[in-house]
Amino acid sequence: MNNNPLYEIFDNGGVRIALIGALAILALFLLAQTITIAANFGRPGVPATDTVTVQGSGQATLPPDVARISFTVENKAATVADAQAATTKQANAALDFVKGQGIDEKDVKTLSYNISPQYSYPNPCPVGGLCPDYTREPKIIGYQVSETIQVTMRDLAKVGTFLAGLGKREVQNVNGPVFALDDSTAGYDAARADAIDKAKVQAKLLARQLGVHLGKIVNFSESSGGYPYPMYSMGMGGGAESKAASTPNIPVGENTYNASVSITYEIR
Image (tube, rainbow, N blue to C red; front, top):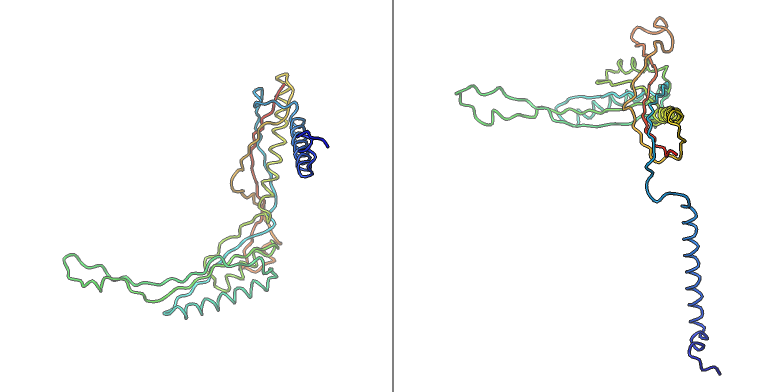
């Protein structure tokens, strides 16, 4: 029998398992540290100071693939119920027309539905006159109910016919068409790619003129050019002589997108 106290401790099965576990954890920690050091090998511990920054401005001109048109139906009546009934009847007729144009349900949505009282304001009390307070208070004389609907059209050749059809149904406050890309980021993505390409060309030219070599990119920033602006091209779906006089001719044109980038390179 061994009377060595250390032997008795390590001869204990529970202690042996705990020791093995601790050694395994230590080995995993050392392995992780080794991988981290290897991944960062050759990288400076401080930000690069020998750098050059170039800018690039890009542009992309793309034809729209959707047109968004909104319109409002509104009616007034002495009661809310009567105003709602009139507005619902007119809105349903307009929606039946929209459906008849082959527009998908997912491309039709209500933007707002409003009920507002209509007031009558009394004549102002003359200076020095005696006017009871109740005669100067505005009074509700009825209600106005309005519904605003937005339609996204994907067949741009039908926009003029669609607007003419809305006019025949006597809707109010027609806004649009707004010609755009269904993927709202596609135009800016293309403009950014153009800006990056131009910045890279500028960086290579500058490096050659300075007699330096470009290293890795250490900083990047970008800014979009705001809302796209249209570049109109006349003609859509044939000449005016092939359409009814009440059908407007709607140029579709193209939208131009802008982006600017700034790229900072390490130089050596």
